[in-house]
Length: 499
Image (cartoon, rainbow, N blue to C red; front, side, top):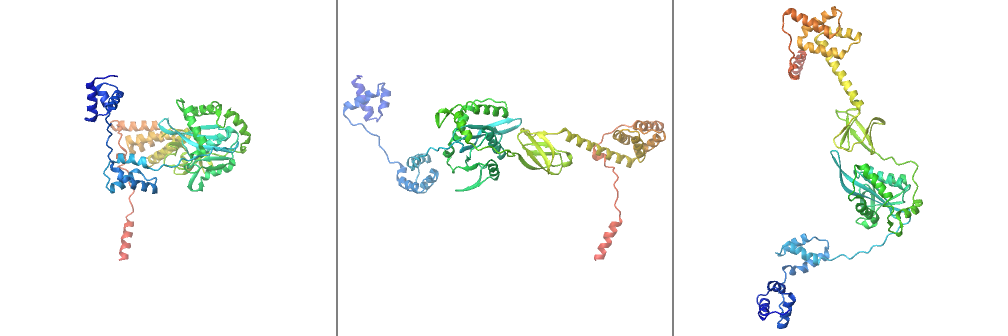
């Protein structure tokens, strides 16, 4: 491109005098940057280079490098504090950037491809898939995944937590699905498998050891921070997230597990086997299945079991909900045993209650028989209390109640009616009316009421008006039995003897 002499002179002046960059000159003069390069080259003048000033951190780099050689994992923030104490005034962001450039890199580690024999090994892990809402409860959605290392067959089941009982239920479900189990199961150092570890000294969870002894497999934890040793289950979890769970619609946990089972037996089983791409996982599993250990004749009992104390109300608390028990077991400690569908409550070896299991929150799951028995006992107790207070105030009522019981009348209803008459007319009038009714051969509250009204009319008194008073007012005239005063004399005489 040919340009005018004036523009060439302007390019040379802007570059050598004003120190503009070539790109800036091309933009401002509306020409291509290659034109600017050509003008500068034809002028024969040397191109100026930007002056590189030494960075402030350069003088501290030898100290930083020596420190990192001794402590390669030392954080940049700690190094920044150390150089600040030695006079560094720069910003922390620039210092962090320089440390990232000079930090020694670990040598890349090579890994062997691990191969296993058919039926020899399986790998187990939990995976978190968010949360699920059940009523008022928000529970974690956990996926139990077990993979056969040879055939890569996947077992998948979802639970609402990662407790030991669900961990064992996942194992048992996988064994039943395969009709066998591998000889060795690999775990990472999750608490359901390993309680404590110091190097090669491992303390297994005793429940897992009992379960492994029942099914005759060897639990084997992988080394710490060695996820590659159980890479098959890690890849299976990634495959589950991408090929099964993403955009999955389900109504509840049972529906999700039904879909997971169908997916494992169809799409997951029909994928190519990573060990031999010419065969599917289903075909390789058919070769591996005869090599699996046989299942024992009796399944391992898997139940959640806790001790629960019953308070004043006949309920036990279990998994965020309350379950009713007979009222005869209040203030006792009972045993709760639960599976995925049922909650059973025991007093020693005797089962006293059984309920469907709820995964909601703050619900009261009740057996109507428990509440009915409690109501009957409370009603009977109220009747006894009312009858006692009535006969103390009106002695003639005792004979009235005997006659009423002899003819099969409802004692509770009569007692309630007589208590109301006692409040309206008073004890003296009620005593006289009951005696009149007994002389007439009547033993019902209506007869007593008629006698009371007859006596009121004869006196010319107005009809009584029912007054509802609070309990503390009604009890203010309660007769209090006084103590014998001779006890105080005994105390005084005892004091004089001491003197």
